[in-house]
Length: 581
Image 1 (cartoon, rainbow, N blue to C red):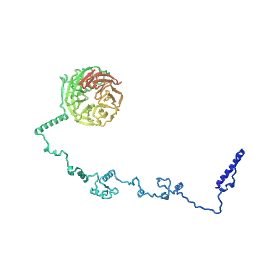
Image 2 (tube, rainbow, N blue to C red):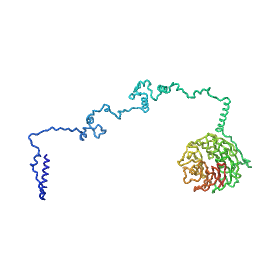
Image 3 (tube, one colour):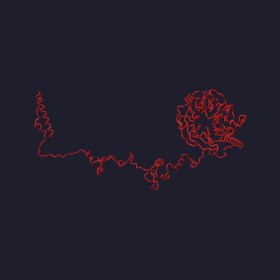
Image 4 (cartoon, rainbow, N blue to C red):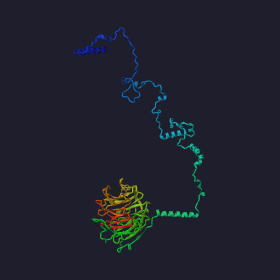
């Protein structure tokens, strides 16, 4: 109160000075406040002091200082940042007791419906008991430990559980058969022994049988069919040969395998011609096959003889020089011949046909030396070119395997089983230490000889099947006829990388395994196509230089003679073999 009076007095003194200034300036005059005027504001001074009892109606609230000193701890807190005392931790909760809180609400719970205790029960047992309870009305009591208790305790329909001996829905019991009896309306045993609507005809007395004559006729027909099937599938065709020339030996006792000396060039020389030229005209046609020719092979080293295989199941040997006669025909396959291969000396050759047989023939006498089969169709066959391994050959089969045979024992000595499709070609590279195979699985695999695991696998999403592969004369490149109408060149040494600069295009071969070949001096690449044309590309520039209409149907193979500068031999599905120069 005294402070208020003092402020008023100070306010009055200030106003006096202001009034004086105003009077000096000619303003209105204001009366001054005297101490007597403020006397009623002072408290009354009485003789007796009066004491009044003060009533505090505000609730007690824990202030910040009290909490910090430990007088209160919020029970909902999960973490405290100081060390509370024992009294603080176990002090009663602040606030009134909830009068509506029931015993169920007061019980501790860790989920919405109550307190769930952890139980060691797998999903199958839980589902089994749940389904049993929903079907039969009882289940095992989960609160009783079955390991400690000898007898099972049930909840729900206990009498039903004892009646069914505690069977669950996953166990068969009397309930199932009773239920079936009610549904079917018959005896359960009869239902279990029901054999079907035709059971009454099972007795032989009621079945119509053919007469003795009819049975005899049926047996003859069945035996004839079985014999025919056995002959076609198991028995190989009979081998025979036809010699078409008058004398097999000349006046000196030399056979037709002897390399001729009077043809104008040295066929014994291992050197290739220095310069090759484009063939321009047809100079001879070998005709004798009645169906399409599937492959041609020149005699090793000299090339003075030509071996051809055809879809008419025959193999023919032709002269390349002089009179160019058909010397011998080899007959021994019951189906089309797919591939042929000479050994290093040319004295023997192998043939692979669709009758599932591989046959070894003597080139001079025409005799079939041996037969090989594994009941699969051979697609290609190759002798091992090593001189010390001339008794071994490999064949690519239709069952995705490459099978290696020994001609001395006639047994399979190795299987290369990694391809995912029928094997189309086998080509030896790297001084015959390795061979390359291509397949219908659109891949190229490289194998070490006699090791049945491929050490190189080439497959790209853009690659197509390559059913014809040829090694270049210098042994550095592999020409692969790809089914996307182009010839791809792979390196044949070390890494087997695709040479992207050497791609030969411009012909149509999709669907046909047209054989590719090189000129001896590596100047040109030749190939047939589906239109029966002979295509010749330049090796360096990959340009298509020349195209000749060679055959009426598919030109399946083209061979450049290894000792001639411009002689190319082609064969087609029109059954003809042609010589171009």
